[in-house]
Length: 88
Image (tube, helix red, strand yellow):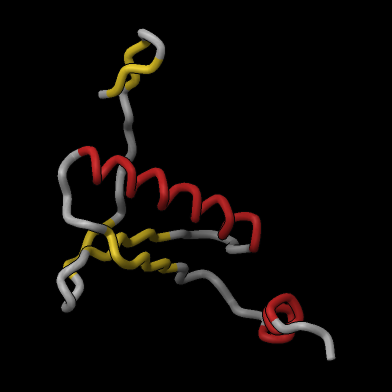
């Protein structure tokens, strides 16, 4: 629960998984099904930040890593590289 300008806020969400990292921090796991694309990846980043905020409010240890699991995703290497590497 939070209070913003006198209004009560109830934060809700369902985390797919939390794993203890060998170095001591926590890994926040997010399972995505269906077609993965760059837009969905961007929305997932926002979702992970939201879950991180909720877990901090609940007193969990620090989230040190995020793990995306997208079993239905097929990486198109040429498209990925063209968006990640500068043109020469």
